[in-house]
Length: 480
Image (tube, rainbow, N blue to C red; front, top):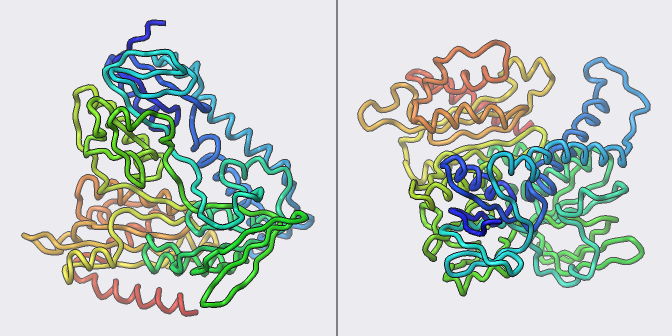
């Protein structure tokens, strides 16, 4: 092996692979160093297995509630080991496109081992490799809250959850973020009793308040129990039972179950990389980078979860490409103005841009809002899933005001297919199109995307009254 490369990417997950691919596309000689399995957290312990479990739970829920369509389904049961077998089959089907053979066929040299930064290169398990540029893309790992007793019990995280052999009878989820909610609903649909506990009192505080309120109501209707604003003071495990002591409103309560999932966030993988000696500055959230993804050390860049900027696979891929190009002379500033967020509960939650409170705080009375309940979308009624809403937030142009519907500041939705529908707004915001362009585009009837057309049509001149009527209807639906 010739141990000299134009770029070395440390980490075999999404950001590292994307950086390596971008460098190869520029005609550069590239080494990818991976200590763990290629594909990283998303493929093996995150996006892929969690969505496979969500889909299995959705199918069971559809069959179990088929009576509302006039379909009688009897004898429906969950074969949990079979569910998990399919989950791992899905992982393997996707992982094969990220294996060593595929990467090497693409021109990327892959080396297994632990990498550390050196002056003018890296060391992989003691072997010195010369390179002019490094992209650190080592990802993240589950963060454990400082709860007495927690480290002494056999808790689960996303790294161990998908290796369960038996389904929990009563699952306790510590953390009401996206991972916690997705898994809580999935196990509840598969038949487990589920309690979700979080020290934060607000439900999904980063989502639009109307979306968050409807999401909580729908999950509670399916049996998920929430205890929010509660501090967990102790965890114990005895005889197969977990016992959590929690404090809420000055009172002490106890919650018990046979499985405990800790889903309280992520921490960057920065240990043993020799960062301090290499002059790479680190903050509480991850490796510090500038707009070009460059660290405080010359020719060292970072991308993905290790930066702590955005914990999404699609953001990691974007950062990996940008970091490699910046390192190799094509410097580009990262922009996070238009990044979609999706929570894969059912119905899905999706947003891009500012929430209504954020928009009003920034732009005041120049903000216009249109809200459309999914019950006004014919397709949603046809498929029997009318619970949901689309909210579009715009502001006027300095020259023409709100003609054309105004510039899109943000879009928020909860409903069937929200994770797909949000991308109409992603494109509109990316090209800075007025919301009216979405209303003018012909949408096939009766597709769910007609809802995007209906919502944005409210924002034309004369449409504000309709927008107000829709918001009043939504408020009534939430009260019912």
